[in-house]
Length: 421
View 1 (cartoon, rainbow, N blue to C red):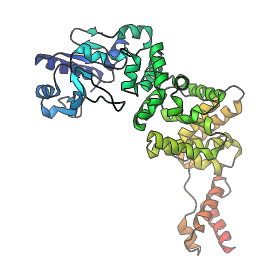
View 2 (spheres, rainbow, N blue to C red):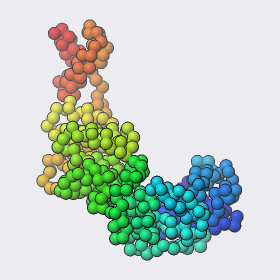
View 3 (cartoon, rainbow, N blue to C red):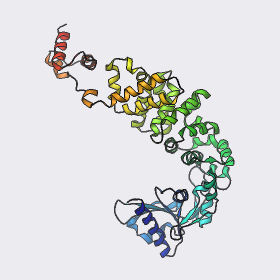
View 4 (tube, rainbow, N blue to C red):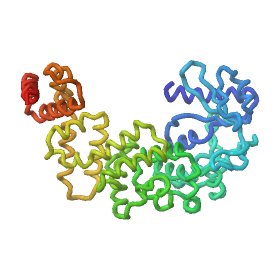
């Protein structure tokens, strides 16, 4: 479905619920986006219908009871593989003993439902038939003022769901807003409680925040309110000057690619000690529950930065394996952000980055040519398979890449000479 079709389907959901005698409105982030003149990425509907009643209206084949205990049902579009809309019953929440989810919910009214949401900009409703915004919490005013404000008492909202501390900073970074003073003070008071949130949830917010254009601001804000030492202690341990340089380097990254930005910032924590890379990556993977592919990419990007820095003066056989790696473009992009994001006086680094980008653009046959020798060639020369194979093949490969062995005939002659000795 395109954006117009998604909006049309979300309107149909509201209309069908109303035709069945229930109140129904668009809710949450889609209303915020509409108020800001942005096209919503998805639509949520809030209704007076209970989950069971929603399933009766749309039929069990088109509904998924993903969170019935919290009043949530997914309604699927008629066409298979098309859009879906989350439909939630108006509710108030009980206590949050786990600091993340309500222990129980009570179905209620739209006004009460608005009051239990996190921030005013996310607490509005929208009538898609009359094009009317229903705002019980002052969200429109805060959007105009560029503020992230907790609904009700900030300490209460944040103590309910600790992840809201990171969400406040993420929304501020995404929209270029400020965090309202009482809300920001509450984040600082509750910062240590972020450890009650799972690594997967923290990782999700961290990733979304780094993808914004204000990742540099977010790092400063995490530090100032006391969150950084719990989510990225490697950066919190830096001195003020280095941490500021790390944040400033992110301005050279632009939007998107959270992993790129994370590597750029972490480089300032390991740059003087390459042996620190493995412990940092291991800690990240354990703390944030990173996938192996992600942690491998981070480790590679950090480990090769010193080699890339001096790549123009090194043998091609040292540089080529790095540039032939599947994470090479990521690593070179990290190097470029560091080179362009730190203070002036580093023209040589910027020149090296341009050179590396040029090497990556080489045809594959030139950047990563087929090896001139293989194990079968060694066996043909009378060498039995043994651990020395890889050493010999590695020597031949280095000579090939450095332009000393130009073709297979030269490589076989070199091999024959080495075997005879």
